[in-house]
Image (cartoon, rainbow, N blue to C red):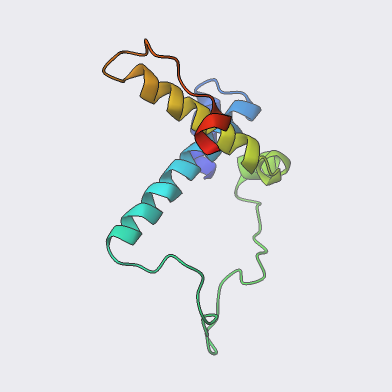
Length: 120
């Protein structure tokens, strides 16, 4: 994550665009991995019972991680922690629908349905 953000910023992305790109990439990657795991037969629903870790030592179980060695993450922590999931999903869905219409055999000559019409 640190290298990803550092590379984007080094390539001219401002902080807001770097965070947006990271979120978009992460969403795409996680969705793809979830689909792939499902196709391979993995259970994707909620677990019936919580996983028993026994007496094992789980690193960062308290979700506390020293960010000293991650200056970009530390600097962007506030922006990375903001929840814009609904707006990001709607924007990504609109972009996807626009691309699908643009790549259709009629090359977009038919008006694309509005998001509300697709979801309704």
